[in-house]
Image 1 (cartoon, rainbow, N blue to C red):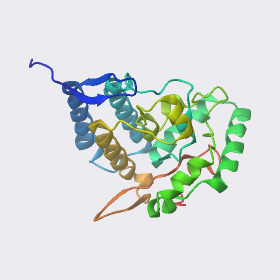
Image 2 (cartoon, one colour; image 1 turned 180 degrees about the horizontal axis):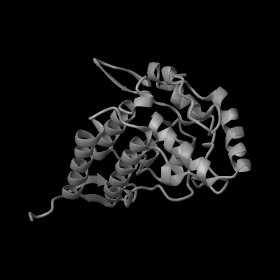
Image 3 (spheres, rainbow, N blue to C red; image 1 turned 180 degrees about the vertical axis):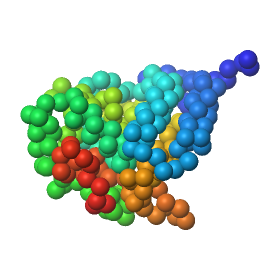
Image 4 (cartoon, helix red, strand yellow; image 1 turned 60 degrees about the vertical axis):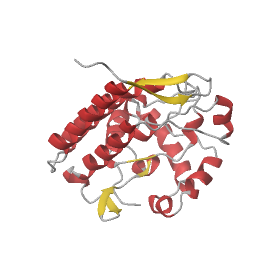
Length: 242
């Protein structure tokens, strides 16, 4: 076995040199790529198979992301980023829907739905986000907590949180995250392969094939703000494009 290689991303907010195991992260990158080529790209997948593959991507990504989490200022309960506009694909929304249905009482689901109903009038549509990213910034200024955030500042759907939630790691001091004036995020290469694989996965699930949008000369999966998928509650995701 060859010698492992390490690289640095510079220094974090504490002045600590952010050294990571490049050999390990490259291995994770390759494993997600193989999953994409051998099991996702075949197409015509069922929803159950799609959720299984999504969990595999999450599992691999989370393992690789441990290399970078140690340098982030993000800590359990800080939740400053949980007021951001966060979008996801249909298969990610379906995993959340299933988790909520299986783990919460009807009363708890009603609380989530009440929060979602209050958020929706203020939430930018996917079209608005694609046209002008300023909509996301304006939404952040409203400081609206995620519908799945509890009063203690922790995520109630943490095991099935979206990829965009998982990859949001900041090396900005906590107080700067709080006021949102200056946020520096980590963006390792496994972020890119993770995003691409999940987009392809969602498009290759037969039920969600129509939920795609133009992306240059190709297509990518439709991304919608998380609450938009649950307009009708948690019996099934809301599959209209807007």
